[in-house]
Length: 115
Length: 158
Image (cartoon, rainbow over all chains, first blue to last red; front, side, top):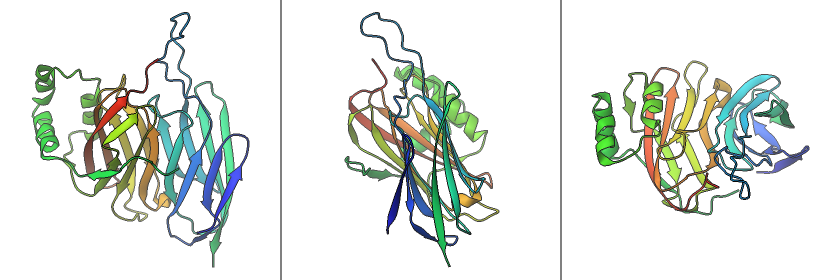
């Protein structure tokens, strides 16, 4: 199946170019982030390095929530998520990650539902 | 993107079933303590999701490597059998690690528009341990699978 690669800032998302109405399709999302766990110590000072992770991920299709994830420090650096979505009509998928500091990263991808 | 490590779907083991029975009877936590296992909170976290409901061992495919050479990035995937409908869908999947600094790893919340519950990610494991996957259907049914993952070089630490 042909897939489109969308790139916007750091996040990368992959969805099929065309999907079948109501048929679940795989979505892959990858973003660069250290996911500092809060467990590590500074090698020189011995001080604990504060936690700083992406703690939330939300995927919507034309504003309707498809999937949400709560990430903890045990999620690896550069978090990778794969999941499924289904669509009744063509639209825009939005992907948003929220950092512990409140900032967000986002990506978008257009999906076309085959007639 | 593809996990390089061997994947191994594992259904709930007889030992896990026994443990859950003991847990339900309030006996499991003391047994764990006797065995020298330090409970990082997984027992309580699992009990909170179950909320007194029994967990079924079938219908949930939890794929993990038998051996993870690098505990910093261990590929895992969870699949719940069955398609969603507007009325009946998987509400959530939770992953807990029994011997990490904290039990919670990741939780997914689905909607009917997810279509199906099949997720994959990469996680950190501090050492060799058991990892628990729980899935909650919207009708209240809960599924559980527990996999042991041997970790050669632990993640999480400094």
